[in-house]
Each structure stands twice: as C-alpha cells, then as structure tokens.
Length: 405
Image 1 (cartoon, one colour):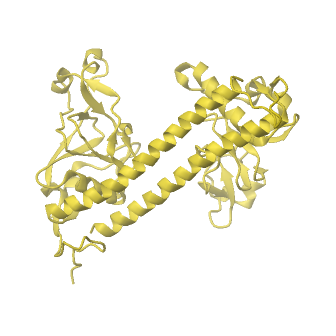
Image 2 (image 1 turned 45 degrees about the vertical axis):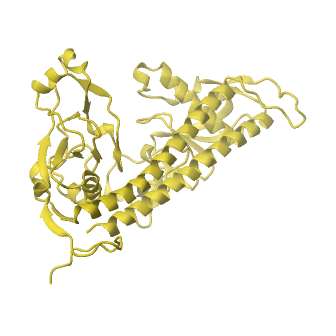
Image 3 (image 1 turned 60 degrees about the vertical axis):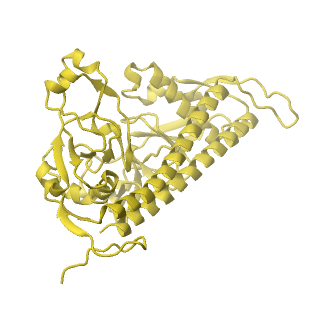
C-alpha cells in the first residue's frame, strides 16, 4: 500500500494529497562557472558572482556577495546570469547550502541553480534544505565530493498546490526572520564586547573601587612571568583505532572542539581510550587552553575535565595573582592584536617560546575581578541569545519535518 502524501502538520484550510514529481519537472537547471582569474578586467564589474562560502548555513534568505564581474566575463566563461527568484543549490564544497537570489547574479561551478516554472521558490528552497541529508548521500568524488545535476533532476519531491506552498513559506519565513533578528543582536553585542575590551585593556576605561577611588597602576609583565604553561600531548600517529573509544572513552580536546564563546563545545569530536590517555595530558574543569596550531588564538575555559591535544597550550598554574576569567580575555585580545600585525591577518604558527615573549598589562586583582565580572555579564547575554537561536532552529527543524512530506 502506497504512503499517502499528506504532511503531519497542516493549515486547516487545506486538504487532499500532495502530488509526487521529480525535481526535474519543476524548472530548468543551470550550472555555474568561474571567469578567468588571470584577467583582472573581468572582476571589476557590477554583476554579483558568488561561491559556496557566500551562503549562510541554514539560512535560505542570505547571500553575502563579495566579488563582482563584468558582462564580458559572463560572455567569455561557463558562468551564466541567473535571474532573480531562482533556487541556488550548492552541489560541491558545502553540500546542503541553499538560497534564493533576490537579484540577478552568477555562481561558481559549485552550484546547481534552478529557474522554476510555477512553484514557490521559497517553498522549494525549504524543501531542498529538508532534503539536504539525501543530497549528501549522493556525494561522489575523491578530494572534492558532491553531486551532479542528474542526481537533483531525479530527486523525488512531494508538492502541494501553490496557495498552500505560499502559506507554508510565509510561516517559515517569519521563523527565519526571528532567527535573523537574534543573530543580528548577537553580532552587535559581540562588536560591543570587542570594542569595550579594547578600551579596557588600553586603559582608556578604568574601573574604580567601591569608594570611588582609582586602583593602582597596571604592571607590564611577560606571559612567562604570569603563568606556567605547557603543550598537550597525544600518541602518534593519529588515527590508530587503539587510541579511540567512543563508548567508554574520555573527552579529548583538539582545535575543532574549541567553540567561539571561550568554552569547549558541549561534546568533543573524539573520545580517547585509556591507552591513549596515558600518553596525553589531563586537565581539570576551570583551567584555560589556547589553540596554537590551525585556528590559532582560540581560548577556552574548560567546563568539563578532558585530555588535551598537542595543538593546544594549557595554562596550569599562575606565578602572579590572577583572575582566570580576566586572563582568558587578556589572551583572546592579545591574539586578536597579533593577528592584525600578521601578513593577511593570519598567524601561521605559534610556539611556546614565542608566546613567552608576549607582553601584557596586569592590574590589581580587585580591578581584574571587576573587569572579569563585567565582560562575563556581556558573555552571559550573548550565550542567552545563542540558546534562543538554538531553540528556534530546533523548532524550525521540527516544522520542516512535519509540514513537508
């Protein structure tokens, strides 16, 4: 008996089954391409040209075009001008990203773009977003995986009548609007935090004691005068089965596991075996680590006990009177400053010896406490917004699963 094409959650004014069709029946597919990067004149135009990195994961309404090409570039390359209101689907390097273009543009070869006949483009974009796991299953290739146009053309869809498509998209777009508002609020708070940190640590803003008096002058110290630190460790080579135990193993922190909020991600990507733990470095909750390879300068205060990889530096104890929360902000801003000095804004590598020579200003412990409390309160507000975003995204995921067939 065939499954009835009816969603679990539906607006009351609609009934009847949705129709089954193939994706190839709803519109025309157009690929993309890249104009010659050796011809500078191609890249000084006014036609947006986007790559997969210009799309925001999970957001079908946002396109951050950074490069613009000329009409001549379009005429002399494989890229095509995609009309407004098309569905842009990333087929390689970021499979599963999808967006609606609100203006004509061109895309790289990493896209399959659909110019629709009659369907609501936003509805189709949400449907593709829901089918992302299916698209990932199509992944083929070795170094760069992806799917091809034929995979999309043959993908089976279930579609309601156009008025129901529109009703669903209006509702889901309102949910996305709320997510965008919260995301913007988070970004503004992060900008505020960064700006006020620069003011505080340059001493343009100073805190006073409870009687309104100034605290003592800050003292200049090298990092090696402030803290004892060492690299983590892990038995080599990586990847051997005996080093890992996902069921009974211990949390193992690598660069990937350091989140953007100065904490670890809730769960580490890998858990290690007791054998590997004997050759790694155990660190208790509440201590600081900082990444020194890959994405350098990401700081975390551990919220759970873990073993630490050699790509991170561990701050074990302190030679000076230090508030740990204050010190994590010092480290964060120190590396932000160093990045500005580095060619291209990227620090290629950092060693324990180089880090030892870094110099910071340290206030009295009382002023450290006030600074830490103030910045932590800003972080708490950012975390609250992140939790709201996560809850709404979960709500949206549930809606996608129940409102579509």
